[in-house]
Image (cartoon, rainbow, N blue to C red; front, side, top):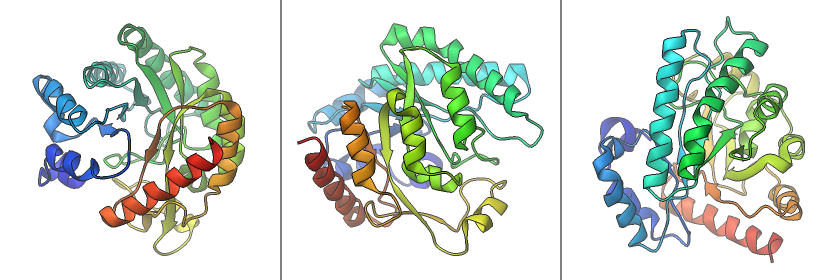
Length: 282
């Protein structure tokens, strides 16, 4: 994230070359990648990925829809609309939305009202471009101060229920449920019929406890004690997760959230997921 989105030390073309060596079908892009800032560059990066035999199915975006200032929210809606266009230009069909930051003064009812209204404002354009908006049970964007407003299961369920539209679904991330103090299987069961994509991940704490982590939530970015780990080596029960998705008829994209410790780790995570996919979708 830092080299691609902040410092520019890594070019997107370098990441495409690295990732395309893995036995995968596509690459999820993040809206903050510096090389995607100019819309005129989008077709070139689409061709670059497709020349590798891959596609760009998903765009990972972080709009902040819970800000108290209406003008700020309108600007965030316009940003999300631009990312919807980016998704379509890159050949994708899924664009992430979030609720926004969990600001201390914000009540649950007001936050759900604001986030739902902003999501609904984005839906007409998403439909026009053939893009499905996906809400993730997120922990926190890398560049935010406060954690995700709809982080906890009860609030997330209410926001999902507030937007009843076929162009809106859930991007399920099991690890984030642990961080919210929730059971990832219970969360999945509660929104199973709305899940259209998934972030496969495993997380662990480098030190301390979840209580220590939550005490550090209101600082910019992820707390330093939080780590992405090799998938299949953490707390998530992928047999339980994948069996539920397979039985429900899920056939969407599963995005691999790993690799912070290098490409070898990422390759092992991909191999683990492919084995489980073959097992449950035989």
